[in-house]
Image (tube, rainbow, N blue to C red; front, side, top):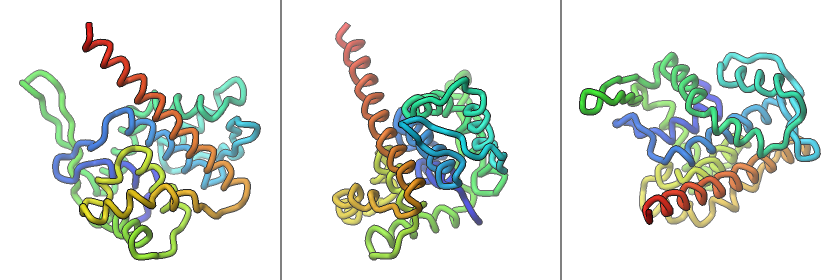
Length: 230
């Protein structure tokens, strides 16, 4: 079963049994935004030119999230910088994420469970129904990081998203393996080899997502600290 980068990222971010995300919404949404842009880049739908995102192929794909993003890019009145689109997609990630989760349900990988906390607050969970696809992802990443297996660009992009979204411990649950991976993941995720244009686009997306996540976390932390002191 073939999965795109966005789907693989969400599967790693979900707790298999509880069906809830294991990272906070800031890291999740910016990581998701990065996954969408990287998927567009590797499909040669976009390129970065003069620090701005250009839509180079507006043909629709089978995934709703890809098509909605293409529409956003088409509807923009001008070419905008990469950080604009990272933030734009992060702001829309809640709904776009739901579209991707529905796709994973349609593929028989996830279930949906709706309930209410204290009989009032809606609560939706997405426990894993079929673990095989996620286990294959985890084994690929394990082989690349710990067994010296040859990586492909998608493996490296997924590892970069895992790193920036604080999901390394979730992706590598064994304590000793996590220690090894944590020390080398940043070095490994710089090794993307495609064409020069795509490679440059991917690197700019990676760098921008990292900066955006760091900035968003600082704002969130500062806001929380200020509120707590009042």
